Length: 66
Image (cartoon, rainbow, N blue to C red; front, side, top):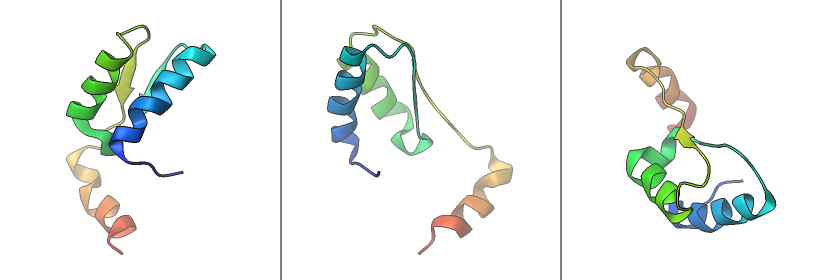
C-alpha cells in the first residue's frame, strides 16, 4: 500500500502504539522524512530506511519509469 510521506507519520505512531520494536522505511521516504518520523515518535524505537547503491539506479529507474 502506497502512502504519502505525511501519512507515514500517523502510521508510524499507530505501529508504535501496537508495540513494534523496529521500523524500516522504504528508501523513497528519504532522510528528511525518516528523521521526521523518528522525531514524531520521540525516538521510542529505531527508525531506518532502505537505500540502493549507485549500481542499482538504472535498474530501479527501469522498474518505476511508468
